[in-house]
Structure formats: C-alpha cells, structure tokens
Image 1 (cartoon, helix red, strand yellow):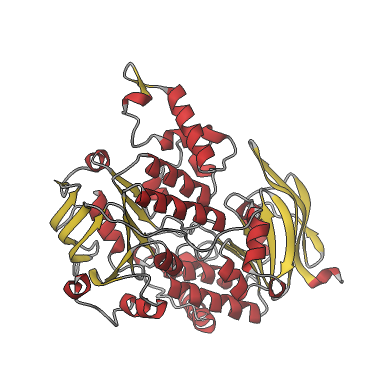
Image 2 (cartoon, helix red, strand yellow; image 1 turned 60 degrees about the vertical axis):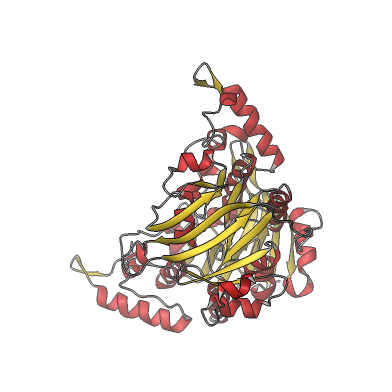
Length: 515
C-alpha cells in the first residue's frame, strides 16, 4: 500500500496525564474521502487523541504524518495551516457574537485594516447552501439552537478550507431530526473528498455513516475494522470488553401514591412572547417512571427549571409528597426529597474547578455525617466519594482529588448521577441522564432508574433519545410548544405515532387518555 493513500497517520501515539495514560501507543490511519469512526467508552482516550492531532496537546511519543510526510503540530494554528479542523464536544463559540462573526473569527477579511464582511458573508452563504448547513448569519449565538451552533462550528471549518474534519461527539446534544441531518451532511462532505474523523460511542451512527472504525479501550487500541464486516454486538464487545444488553429489562410497575403533583403550571419565556410552559398538569406516582418526550425547545427545559427551582414559575402549583413547594428555595426542595440530574452538566451539575469529592457532597455537606465540630470532616467525605467512584465506575486520573474539569464528559455525567441517586430521593428528575454516555454506562444508568422505581421512588425522565423514550418509562407525556399534547403507553405506541405527537400533528384529550 502506498503511504500517500493515507491523508493522516497517527503512529504509536502516547499521551500521559497525572495518574493516567490517556493514549498508550495508539495508531490510527485516515484515508482520503472516508468517514473513520473512533469508538470507545467514556474516558477511553478518544478526545485526547484528537486533541493531539489538533495541536491542543503534545504527545510524549509518536509521529504524525500528513500525506505520508511527517509533520509537527504545536498548536491549533499549525493544524489549521495543515487544513485540519475540529468541532469540539462542548462548542467553542462566542455567545455575544453573531454566527458570521464566529465563523470568521481569527481569519477576518480586511482591507487597509478595515473589516470587509460582504465577501465573507457570500462565502458563508454559498457553503451553507452547498452542504445543506442551514444558518442565519446575523443571529446571535446565545439565541441559536444547539443544532445551529453546531452547523456554525462546521461552517467555521469549511470557511478555512479544511479538508480533514474532526467531529468530537457531534450528536451528543442534538435532536433525532438534527442527527439525521448531520449524518447526511457528513456523507456529503466525504463525497466531496473531505476526510472525517468521527468520535462517538453511538453504534447506530457508526453503522449508518462510517466506512471504518478504530476501537479504543482504556487508552489502548483494540483494533480497526471495516464497518460493513461487523455489527453492533461485536463493536460493543470490543469497546466494553463484555456483552452489553441493549434491551432495558424491567418488570411491571406498581404505582403507589402520588409523589409529584403539578397543577396548571406556567413558566415565562426568557425572550418574551408567549409562555414557554402553558397550564401544564400531570402527576408522577411512587413506583413509576414517567417520561416527558418532545423535540428540543418545546418547553421541557423551562418545565424542569420550574420544578427544580432554577426558574420562578409564573402561575400554578407544585406539590412534592403532599407538600406545596411551588415557591421553595432549591435547598428546601432538595431537603424535601427531590434529586435533579440536570440537562447542562457544566452549568448546573458540577463546580468544574472543585475536586470530585467536593462535588460529591455539594448538596449534603451540612449533614451531621460530613461534619466534625462544625467543620467538614474530610476523612468521611473522602470515604464517601471513594465509595461512589467504585460503585459507579467513575474513571478519573487521581480518584477523589481529581478536578472535575479534567474528566471526560461521560465520567462527569456518571459522577452527577451517582451523587443524585445516592441521596435516596423520593423524586428523581433525570434530564438527558445518558447524554454522552457509552453503551455500557447507558445500560448501567437505565438499571439504576429502574431500581429507583422498583424501590418505590418516583422518577421523572426527560429525554430526547427516542430509544430511551420507548424503552425506559412506564408512561410517556409528549410536550409540544409548551403544552402536554398526549399521554401514551410506550408498549402500545409506535415510534412513528410518537413522532406525530412530537411534531404537533396529533394531540389527544388528556381526559380521554386517562379513562
């Protein structure tokens, strides 16, 4: 095989951090015009390896070749000069800038020192048209949907004429419709001769778009296979080292008394206009999992903010175990038996510059068990954190003293899930609890949710993942434009029919559904 057949070769790359070998002698080769997936569990070293290619990290050893010639990539500018671009898992956009300003940032076209946006705007609109990347160049990022932010990141790469594109977990924050769109965009890019490295742990996506896949496990390369010669079961075995159960196992639910009762709840919209949540009423009983389903941006976020106290409600009533908590502070809701796995793990789930053990007791450090003469008992806190790390298989370089910021997204998520479930709540509100998790971790989290239900706890699940919506809950409530438009039984509804409710094409009378 001629060496130049590969546009990128990462040969024997080793990268270490304190207490952990993130990449241990890994070799990956990318062909021109292919979509090459990097598959692995949370913390397997996928993002680290791509950050080495993009110049964010320097490896301890190993060689990178571009078109058969050895190159040194000291920083992202070097990567850009080699036409390598990267869309990061957590977007790198300036929120108060427009889409256009973000795309040209750092390569602003100018004449005599004056900014010349017209040509840039034309180029952006042409690229947007050519690749099916729908954006509004004048919209401010803070007002854009997550899908549009991602399209902005992709246009940023294309604007710089990059022909090697790295996508880091690109679908972790997208709706099912946006994922389908993105998959098509990736295929279009590859057909144009672009070469794509695609970090993921979603097996369906790999089977749908990738040509080849390299599997990493605990920092080591397990192997590279052609996608057409493999299947989901084999890939999950390579990735996790064991067979994974794709079906959620659960017995019949036995709902008890009402744990959460919501009456005529309305929550105002952040940007004026009509309320984000309008006169919503429902209940969640002990011993059942109720899922709020819907396309992103239909009021689910604001509903959860209202229930958890992150946002004041406009009108209506919230009861937890018979007690009115409508206007209670967040700490009072916690103490009343509410746990919350938030949608945005960085904003509301963790203090990123705290250690793992500090994050584990964020909502309970005042409890007598964690105190000694009015001061925090560090020994007890460490033992508690160590126990949760082991129980939930949270992987971090230095155990309990690891800074939360330095952990992979999936392990940050596992830490939040561990903390919230271990509080032994009466009501667990789980928003996108498996976002960004690998198949092994998803299987584990789903078992935890079912275990909570079987212990007689109430679980309110909010999910955008259709597979999760169909397999985990006992009842599904569909939200559309701030209202609940349907209550359905996951055992009796098809994905297509659920999609009609989610798109607003179908609605039922709640009274009829309850009969």
